[in-house]
Image 1 (cartoon, rainbow, N blue to C red):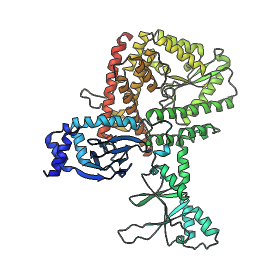
Image 2: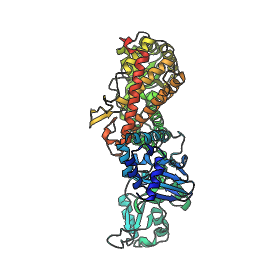
Image 3: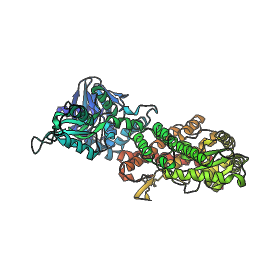
Image 4: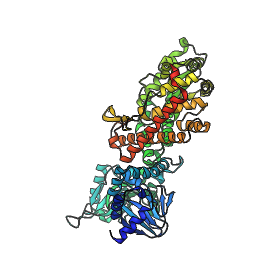
Length: 625
């Protein structure tokens, strides 16, 4: 081994996770290292570029940034970065720059991957840091400006339309009309057989107006005489915000997007405006402007675009669930407005309820509708029920048109069982809590996640107060709820390997809702009822549970992380289905995940399993009968 490699070997021995490697393995790693020097202030890696190596700081200091430019971490000798990109689609996720003159050791991706997959102790040490990083990545501030974190690649929806320099203005006009575009990239002829054509300029609608028509030039004028030749462009992995600045700085409305020096699309200022409008606030405002069910149903594309955008920009599951729940509530509210316009004012006051994931603000793009009606105590079925039956049918049918499928368990306001006066709802909750049976609570558990959407929503505050007051002191009720919360177990076998099943189009799959997020929400609900929490959202309930100090130390944070990670795997899977043109669902095949994701998902399921064991210990569900 050469002197330089011996020096590398000696350095690596002093720092984890290398210090835990066998000598032979460590020597192999040292012999693969590429040494790089970076001057203070220089960029080391940029977001989105291929992740080719794992970086270890030999000397100096490195700053790691989020995609929006915020400082994430500072590293000195022995620190390392880049593992997240190597473990996730081989793309750099965190830009890095040298704070001081810095010497780095670069370990090639194949060597790092081999270490990670074949040395469990090494993987565990790397993963500890990586899990922490994952928590930061998916916990962005809810008020962050999303233009600051999205790349221009998300704006491209078609390949660029091109035309040769020899073409005429009329050729250009016809091409733009035929292809339905407002700009053309004008290309020079290739210099040789191996050399692709290069961009000579860009021709826009405005160029045709200003440089051709207003100047009264002939239609046979070559495009080379009227195009804009001082090209401004952006790389595919630059931020949308940077693209907007380029347009403002150079007073242009179209930008070619390049990858490896070749154009892959053209974005317009209108694309940025349209993209920025695809957030939950815009979708919600659009919902309340629609005049009928057909118009509301047409917004499904915008809802899916909003969901996909939040996933792309690393929003947390809580942010996504909350935004999608707000959208779902808005559909219900607008449908109720339209129903009252059609049917007239209600004969007695009422409150329309949201149940389950919408009430918990944990709704995703794959969801059904769970709802109910609370009616004023003056409700007379003979005189009033026709109105509320028609109202419920209008709303539930409208929701189905808007992408919220009918509840398979018929928990909807169209079911007379779930369309009752307030006094009967109070009697139902009292019966469920004071004289519980596992079966009655299995049928009614969803009603313990309830929120008022429309009408006399203050009634629901009273119902929740009743639930909180009576549930906290009812050991038999909590035992029955705990028993039902143990019915859905995590998909892990005896040796902690995944237990898969055939699920729809997936042949070896795990249903992440049925075996992951749902049992997590179930057990969190039991603890929340036990401590008298009035929160609805699972993460808010966990905060109250942690404050009540009823869990072993650290278990509350573990549950938080497990719920976040499983939720995000489920969310990303749905977003990938949408992008591929497939029908999104809750199932995922473990083999489609990276090794890091499989390990982390297994960890999350183990946390769920341990939490269920503690639930069984604390509430003794055997007493439920």
